[in-house]
Amino acid sequence: MATILLVIIYLAFISLGLPDSMLGAAWPVAYAQLGAPVSYAGFVSIGITIGTVVSSLISVRVIRKFGTGGVTAACVLLTASALLAISFTHSFVVLLLLAIPLGLGGGAIDAALNNYVALHYKASHMSFLHSFWGVGATISPLIMSHFLKQNGNWQGGYRFVSIIQMSLAFIMFVTLPLWGKVSHASADELHGGPIEIDNRAAIKKHGAIFAVLSFFFYCAAEASVGLWAATYFVSVRGVEASVAASWGSLFFFGIMGGRMISGLLAMRVKERTLINVGLMIAVFGALLLALPLPQVFSLAGLLLFGLGCAPVFPNLIHITPQRFGAQYSQAIIGLQMASAYVGATLMPPVVGWIGQSIGFSGLPYYLLGCLALLYMTILVCNRKTGFGIAKPQTAE
Image (cartoon, rainbow, N blue to C red; front, side):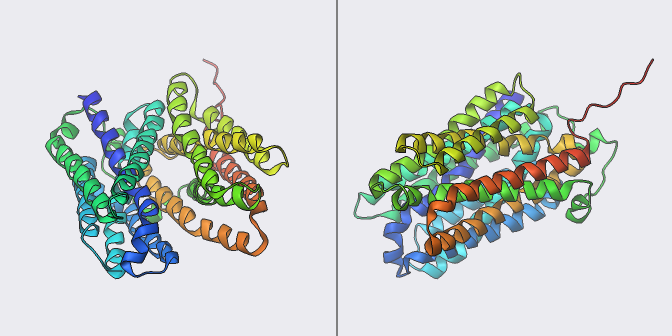
């Protein structure tokens, strides 16, 4: 039963990744048909982020009332419905409004399943879980590309993906009884009774603020390099735009492959080691991007940066119950997801504004700064929570 449920969770994360890369793939055609300026894609992203942040913050209460399985099934259906509605719209204002429920569904799925896997499965499964997000995020642009070839039919791409989401939602609802049959102790059972932990209580937990900030700095780096890597190669390295676009995908390839590798390594290597090694690889990758070396080294740097980032996010989530206890983990993971979305939304535009003003040659140094702040917050959190610190043994 536990294995079947894990497959269902993986499918849910594919559904989480499917909508995430659709807007970028559709927008070069969609903005003109919607009568909106090309820059308005940022407003749609902000609408999605508002939904994800809100649902991440209220996830602890909703999941406590309806359960992880129920919330996941309902939210996959919510995202499917939003995608279907988007496929029929010809108004930018309507698209902007529909972005909010799309984000609401995604944020709740993210917070619910990350906490469930952190509590009930080994670290390797957390890395594999986030690899399946990459599967969804990789598939949807290919689907959109197919439909755009049909007279720019971006609505057809959204409609097709909504049908996939509907199918996944159906599977989620049919398999709801599995969540009750799998014999895992709940967070309440692990601590001897139900205790209400809200966001205010969670953030006051020793070290929690640093755990939350870690996700801000991580996603500030990940989202920025994902958005501006191609521009960096064009404006700084003199690469043609069409070539730079394909080179930019190396970062995501590094993340997806790296999470598969870290999932295998997690069976033998501790989470803390995977995080530290990942950060060292990411620093090395950023340095290769920064140094005036031949282009092949820049490509290797981008790939290594993705490879190094790969184990950080899933393993930081997985150690949350170990750092703060199972009672606090759902609330803190919800706060971490909210912080991640804020970092991913706020910082890439800042990088773009700086790059437009003084050039994008500073992108690698910005990434190094984010990694330094990320490492500092991880280190402080570990010290405040005592995570990874050997306790002195008492004589028997």
